[in-house]
Length: 424
Image (cartoon, rainbow, N blue to C red; front, top):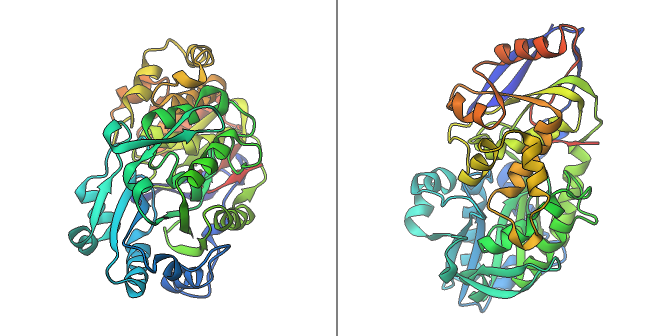
């Protein structure tokens, strides 16, 4: 009997799986990677050795103002560690520079003050100018050009008008952009809603290259690279974290070159071989990525990559913030089936993408071939069931439901952290 821990909110759930059922446990090596130096030293070392770029200190010299793009409340970027280091090094080099911190909300809701305090710490929230990007506020964005895909590129005015634009973030596998981090801080991070919608169109989401761990020929990634260049994103600090949200490596420098090096490192640790099974258990790695159903689709895609067609995906995710998007919820709940959602979304033109379309398209793709059981005691079951997902309050309850569907001898693959792996 195997006892396996699955991240859930800010704790773990345990499940006992009979040995004769268990096919594999798929985990990223990021969780066992042991750096030889502490987190702060890792970050300083990256900043001391920028990739393809002058140092941060050289870049800020002579500048009157700058903007630091940072991730929002849905991303576990350890800003309590990274941001103080960035601010100190910047001000040591240029004490008088005006710094604004711009939260890359993308298409998400604004980050609350309480979430800012949790993310940055009280001191930074009290002393620094922190601004939420609002993608639907047309007065806060400016047209920059046209994306390779043909969509209009509108970006935050603060980002475009500053003398120096840099960003902090983290790199992990991403279910349609290939990897997070780097260029994503600009698009979708500080892009207008219309730009995000064009980039996330159904045609691109359906591309065989818009998958976890893939950037080559990925149309979504190519748009994002273009946006970062047009924004003159001059420097990035991107970290790689383990399951405890601790920094295990960092990459700094040119927004494309440093990011590519970071992606190589993550790929070496995160890539695992698929082990097909009747039942696959996955998660979103716990808080903060498992706050809603919207974000939880990411962990489901990992399970999708190793689940037999017609199999059962058990998704462990708190979803304490509900569905995560009205359009996401409505388009699933108002459809008679996931197939209806897919048939409808494939007819939507690239320039007429609707909010959250990419998320309900991917969820419908998964549900069209698999039964999904969402495990949570923090979300209204009615919301879950309305979206064509089954609900269970506990892992044991979900497993019993899965056995009823696939039989007591069903094979099981477990992915304790579905957002940390690239399944090939």
